[in-house]
Image 1 (tube, rainbow, N blue to C red):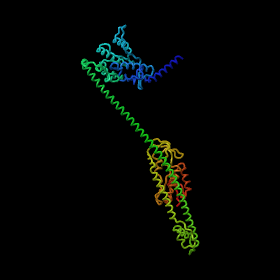
Image 2 (spheres, rainbow, N blue to C red):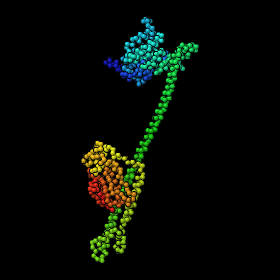
Image 3 (spheres, one colour):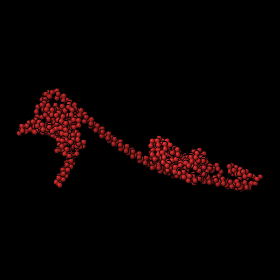
Image 4 (cartoon, one colour):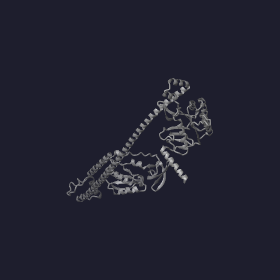
Length: 578
């Protein structure tokens, strides 16, 4: 129980620390660089200046230089503490993107361990610690060295420091150090596996910014600080003379690097502003595009609803006009038949009242009757005393039919013009394209409609009625393409010619009967007497529906199945009632 409570207390303590310090869990894995992004010393709180440091990606030794009180040692301690915290599974005060490799050891020589009792000077104390570190260094270790080469002659300290760094670099571990020695900065700039870094210093205010700049060496700025504090100019001049040309060249190079750094920072600032402006413009553009797309969809939806309503109204109007037209045509046809029947009856009565000069034969009796039927009855009854009620002559009936047809045609033409903008263009059908399962097709070889089951190359398995068979792709015709190509249009005039064949294959029963009515009306106005209705063989459902409809149609006198040369059971031959 005590262990469990201790474990829970540790977890809660870590969580509270993460909240108070703004800490995050870094990514810890093998074979990665030690990368700290906006890292802060865990004891300095949130108000300290964050630093970004990296070592292990292309180089394994990082040399940090710069003035005193610039933050070099604090940065070195931050690297070591955060690495150890991450390896302990603790959250660290750093931003996302921070990575820490799995280290086998962290070794540090930080601070002055001089001792009178042990007769250790500053240099001796540092060297004693380094001697303990060297055997432990190697792959997977992190070595931190503060003020390497200090406490002795600068020339000898530089030489010894360079040798130690080369040794540690060859061992394969990670090394981060601070120094004031210029020779170490030059060596880092010229040696593979090394990288310079500098703590930033504001020469105008003579104060450090505590940021670490990767890729450039730092300067101690001792002469600049002395000049700002009022050291005599003569002393400063002689000091610069003693530095020599090499130091002046290094200082000039550092000045150039700082100017380039400032230019890069200014460019980065401008790019950031431009990127922000571009982001705002892009966001505004996307909002406008989204609004335009929504408006377009709204208008299309409204137009679709309105078009549907108008089409439905037009369909009802056309259906009413066609029904009225059929009713009138039926009445006119009945009136015509009644007139012909009355004419025959009157002709028979006339033949009985008029005594012929001789006994006529049956053929002679029929001749006057036929002549009477063809030439009309006005002249035949001009001299008879038996009055008869006049009936509408045939040309009057035809004229009335033509006038009714023209009214229907005008109404349909007006509707067709009104919906031209809403009528979608027919989709082209690629006869060579693969046929998906379920496609309605017509088998030319068998003269029958069917349905595609599957396709392998140029061979297609289809169902024709109750039979499954495999046919060539070239023998099949997509019914949708034929349907668009065989639409029926009313003739422009009652005397215009119409096709004697109508193809209803591929249509539903309701669509087929609607097209059949249109075709029969057009054929009646064109005075066609014999028509062929192609419905295919199939299951016989469409044929039965067509023949049942023809049986009740007032314009149809008779019908029959086609002969072999006419198409057989796939065709019904219709005789019109004239």
